[in-house]
Length: 382
Image (tube, rainbow, N blue to C red):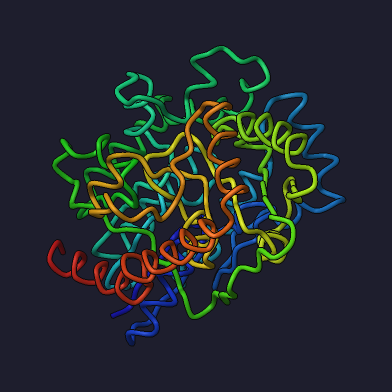
């Protein structure tokens, strides 16, 4: 089977590609690298010039004057020149409703071209889109990544601006076109099930794929200080609930200065990020999820204790009442301090949870198993 994967935000499509190739399929991945993360691709539509040191100057100037990001236009143009190579695939899967990350009108034009050149188009719900944003704005869940927005935190405002582009009339045209075109939409974790479950194009959830063959696991050495790691992406820190972690870490650092080492990074490339957190025993991921994203799962696969989404819905879905595979992080500083303190004072618990975390990822997220689930879903829905 020839498969085209369009877009990337969390390495999901890269891991899926690796699984599909291992199962004997031909896979092409086109994406824009997702900024500083610089994810691999077969065909790149990265805004090379606009994101270069030279191009950044006019880019910022143009944006300041007319509020237009020329990087978006460059991504669309570069994707356009790949179109002749993006034909006659058996399956095309889009990472979300704006996989090309260009201007909305150009996004719609290019998605129509891809659709005209291929038969079976599938869509992933793996982040903010028209459906998920509307769901969150109605406050249907106990909490969501919109919490800081609802609370009116001034510093957080900028992080939410781009999200409302999914509610514009132009994007609604994209949304409507896609839902009239796709064979089905797939949720990538439990956070996206509720926004989709009443939609007739929803065909189920498939967990994130993790390629364990590329993840080196070493038994956690907790004979000296416990290493706690927080990797910050400044573009989504409020959506992840990072301020809660930062406040908790200040308390922990003061309380256990002889027992812990705390590492905090901001906006570093994926490969560099991985090297730094390899030394961590505990990783702080997010407080507003009900399930884990790729970042948390990769750390769990390395046997680390991850503070992330592991709420009741997650425990029920995976039948984990007796097995603690991650720490359910909540937007509560005192709660986070309590959980961190317990682990610091009971280091054997870190090893135990880390071991269960890796077993869980191997059981539920193995990239070959997940690739097979995608293949089955595509075949039965096409």
